[in-house]
Image (cartoon, rainbow, N blue to C red; front, side, top):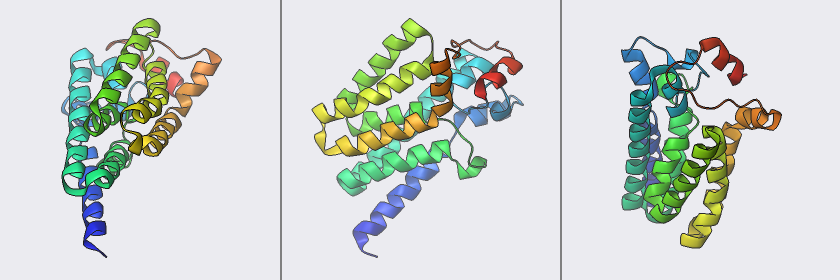
Amino acid sequence: MSSSVLRLVLIGLAAYALGNINPSIIIGKLRGIDIRKEGSGNAGMTNTIRVMGIGAGITVFVVDVLKAFIAVKIGISFGGKYGAMVAFACVILGHCFPAAFGFKGGKGVASAFGAALALNWPSALIAILIAGVLFGITRRMSIASLVAAMAYPLLIWHFAPDFVFFAIGAAAFLMVMHMANIKRIAKGEEKPLTIGGSSKSEEKEQSK
């Protein structure tokens, strides 16, 4: 194995390990809650807000963004363009499928934003702005996230065209992770975000 390939493997392993740091699961355990058995069952920011409140949700968002940002910066530092893409992919996989937590994590939205921010900050900021505007209009995080994900390859194409094909793959992955949400949106059944008070039965029904 050449030194460059070995370097990329190590970058990928480090990024995957960082992705395994899931604040939603950790905060839930500290409060005696298994977030993956509450609400929608998703170990991410949105379900954390629903189940544990806005403070916990903000903490989850910040940690998820930071871990992915750090992972991609490490990838850039030690592997350049290819290291950045390997780190981006592996930190998201680590978040969505964490070995430390039985391969059941979140859907990768906040982590994808952190990784995108490290890869190319102008495109990432515009994407999060799009998401923020749509969330303000619809109150549905899934719609905001999906539209931002679809816009991201176009933004990358403008700001950093070397990453456009990778961005298409990343956007497609996020859409696959949100397939259940897409089905509910198509049926008009996607519910708006509530904070720390939605019933477990209601959210379980929404997660089917």
